[in-house]
Length: 291
Image 1 (cartoon, rainbow, N blue to C red):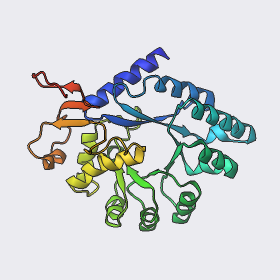
Image 2 (spheres, one colour):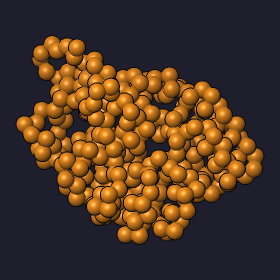
Image 3 (cartoon, rainbow, N blue to C red):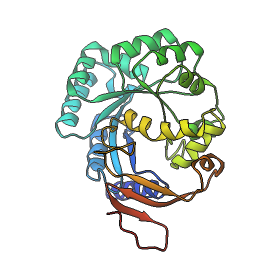
Image 4 (cartoon, rainbow, N blue to C red):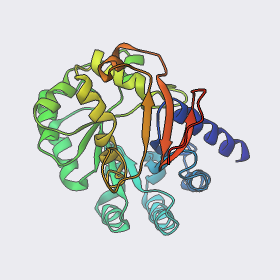
């Protein structure tokens, strides 16, 4: 666990150096038991908001909640996670949602944890039913959604989240992001970082790919990566935009014009990072105070 904690801090610091000041961590041990999940959540909670702001989400895997005994174990683990504030939201797939049953959903709703739906694509009727039943804060989905699925999402209150870097690596693409935006839906961008499947944590790269591959304008991509992403994380009340009363989380980028960002693919343009009014990263030779 010592190595896990040290590796996690190193990764968070690398994310900060590439322009991420607040991020969402999806936690799942991958070992098939909830106890291991709790241990991982505890370790990450111990480094919460250092060196970047974090929001933890507990990913429920289908095998964890298969059968009445496992469901009871899940409910007990849910109470522990809530009591100790180990997570702020829960990630679920349609399969794990079905496995939990109606009674468990009531417990999730009472816990106060927000829900994120991991939607791989499929029947628009199933998507509509899931949105009504679970009322997720965000829906993580591929850009290859059908027009019917886009229509369902566009009429929901959930934020659709896309991971351009993941889709680029898997050679997938579609026009559903453009369709959703044109329909008035809220869209957010994520790096979709995964150590094995998508080892890219640069939001600058995600922003570039959103413009080049998904058809967003530079302004739309920036909004999706900042204020919309903050809404998807449930932290929009304190970060995501420059407003009176919010934390002074700011990036200084080495570009002459913001419209240059998508063109500078693969380049780290971050020269300064300011978090909560404090200078936390400085690539210049100047000594600068954020106060």
